[in-house]
Length: 330
Image 1 (cartoon, rainbow, N blue to C red):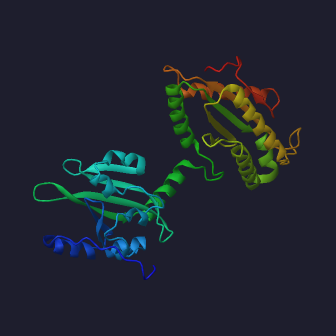
Image 2 (tube, one colour; image 1 turned 120 degrees about the vertical axis):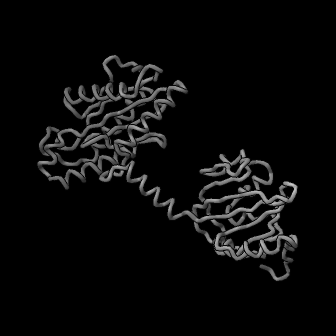
Image 3 (cartoon, rainbow, N blue to C red; image 1 turned 90 degrees about the horizontal axis):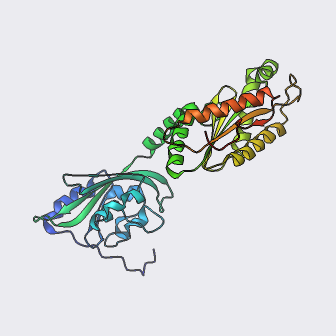
């Protein structure tokens, strides 16, 4: 900081609050207090350690958001002071109102602390400070660094929803996603497509190259299939050597195009499979599309795609197959 720059003058704490402020200053939990003008009147030492911003740079200013974010946005304490608690869902990953009359705000979100450069998951609790007549004169916010807990939860969620071999979504994740996309498609009256992808003659491949070779084969196919996905598509390992692809808002014609791209990409891998006529690993794909109706179920879409996959196998493998009637309805 330029020595010629004048430091902001901190707003003095009321005399009868002096002892409380001294306690907060020494509190091990990062804590700051903002008055009704939006000016910081307390920034304790724990807050300095968390953000890397010393108190003298923030006291008396309304720039405390800079300690947590790289662009202007209110903190939880600011929302309380401005009567904007209803804006919390747009600003925080998780939030809830507490206190006897819902005057306190608890929230969580990721922050990239500008001064330290560290990305931290912070849980904040903001509460009003009232005078003897019940008028809000300030807001106090405490901050907890929950990064390690958040990362541990994410790791557990990853284990619960990811296939260990391929890194794709697992069957549980597929079932949950298909159910959610089915409901969304029904609400918005949009088509929902599904591809069932099965590796041809995989038993012969395993017999020739062993289970380690088979695992490597599945991993490479998984990568090939995933490379054809849009951001909102889902590819999952359905079981064994079978994969499932959920294509939201995709009609049957578009699903068939995606299926053919997948088939060609797997064949282009040129993974040798000497027990087959093609001499390389190929896949068969069954496609189906639904316009979900209230009386229909996602299981019907799965059954239709499975039947199409069976036809592709019966017709000679290394091909795609559409439903018998080739309609967009299930």
